[in-house]
Every structure is written in C-alpha cells, then in structure tokens.
Image 1 (cartoon, rainbow, N blue to C red):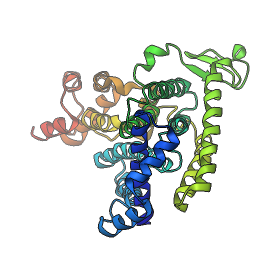
Image 2: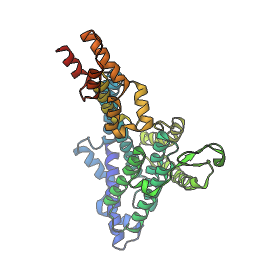
Image 3: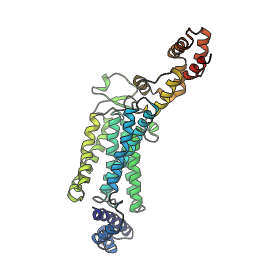
Length: 383
C-alpha cells in the first residue's frame, strides 16, 4: 500500500510536468512521455520513497476517516446523556458542524481518489470532479429540504461557471492551482447545500419553487410558486442530473477497471449509489427548521430559564424552528417577560416563600422588571 500511495503521488507530479510541457508546445501524448523520462522509473522511485518516507502520508485517507468517526462519539454521548442541558445543546451545535465538515472531507477524498484514474490534465477529469461535487451537494439539499430547488440550481450554475473558468484559463493554471481551484469549488457547493443558500442566492432567485403532486393550478396557494414534477422550471436540474450521472457512471467503470485500491472502489460506488436513495427516503429533515434552530437552542434555553424559571420543552424548540422566531431573540424575550406563565411563576414563588399572594403592584413590578426568576426568588427569601 505504501508503494502504491507514492506511485499515485508521483503520477500527479508527472501530470504536472506534462502540463507544463504542453504549454511549451508539446502534444499531450509526447508531453506525458517526456515527463516520464525526466522523472525516471516511477515504480523504482516509489519503492525507494516507501522505504525512507514516513508512513503517515501513505495512510492519510484511513487516518482522516478514523479521526472523523472517532470525533462523533463524544458528541453523540453528550447529545443523549446531557440532553436539555447547556452542554447537551452545545454538543448538538457541534454535531451540525461535524456533519458539515465530514461531508466536505468525504467529498474531497472522493475527488482525490479520482485524480489517478482521470487526472485534471484532461477536460474529462475537470468535468467529473465538478459533477461529483454537484451530485453530493444535491443529495445534501434533498435530504434537508426536497423543495429547495433554488440552491440546487444555484450550485449547478456555480459549477458550470467554474468549469468555464477552468477551460478558458486552463493553460494559465498549472496542475496544483487547478486542483486547488476544484477542491475549493467543490467545498463551496457542499457548504451552500448545507446552509441551504448560496452567496447572493436571494438576489438571484426572487421567488421560490414548491413541488406539488397535482396540477399546480389546482393546488392551494403558498408564498412559493408551485410546480409539478414535470414542470419546465425543473428541466435544468434534470439535465444536470442526467449529465452528472453519465460522467460519474463512466468514472466508476474506469475506477473498477484501472483502480488499484479495493476500498476506494467500494466506498465510491457505495456512496454514489446509496446517497440518492437515502436522500429521497429521509428528505425534508430541515423542512420545518429542525436543524436551523439548533444554533439558537442555547439562547432559547437561557431565555426560558431566566424569564420563566424552567427549561424549554421539545414543542417549544419546534415552535421556534417552524416560525423562525429565533432570528429576533430580543422580541422573543420581550414576549416571555409579558407572558402569563411568568406571572404565574411569580405568584407561585410568593406562595412558596412568603406564604401569601402578591399584591397587584408587586406582581406588576416583578413582571415588568428584567430580573431573572432566580434573582426574584433570592430577593423574596431575603425579606
């Protein structure tokens, strides 16, 4: 495995050299032959490097995957055993970051595994790499919200723009910068899909689309433009999906024919086949804001404990996720301060501590104050 790892590394350097020779006027095949002559026997060099170079780089793929899997264990333990606490809520937010980072890392690994099979010195390699990024980003979008067609279209336009830039300025980019450009582009597509919104997406798409099973003209009205599955609004997505599937199928066949690592073949094929199935089966995970509210759970928790003297329940989080009220926490706190529940809590404190009902003036004073329930409780005990 060590020798093969370094053989792959040498191949990338040979491709880089061949790319430079093409810029000097060589034909692609002649440039590749000349580059191999300049580097010497790749098999012999790989053998020597494997003997003297640290093993870390050779097993980098496995190390990254193992660390990724180990990182989720403590987060899920906190999620289950520290639920409804600040620590548990923080772990929920870290889990979101873990999944986002993990998706990007896995996608970049798949792109890296592609390079020895279809290098970026060829136009096909660039198209396959960008198709891979768009394909996984689309699966992420479907998983979170099937009706988020705007982000899928946005990522498609973004990927096509990156393709045009790379093809127009192919000679100006050496292989290293070409790889860097693609890795950044693919990472951004995954990030846009995870955020459910690309840069300036709202300015580009002034109206959202919403899928209905029946004729859109008979469907109930919503804030979005309702479309049927065969609507012309979705043809762009279908065309991109067909092209990406064709290129990725070609790549998988090449991978099984020319690839040397069985685990790469199995993982790549499994992900490309399994992701769409899983995505459609669990689609709509965030359609009601279930994930959007996670970063705000600590603020909501603090507001409830301070103002109402209790922890928020699941139905409270669901309400804020559905209504997106967490985007205006100052208004949420104002509503909680003026709520009947706060008044009842203050009355209960008077009954438990002073063994009497508060006067209307006392009740109004504490209700309107910005004191927390714990502060009110301490103040009553001091009387």
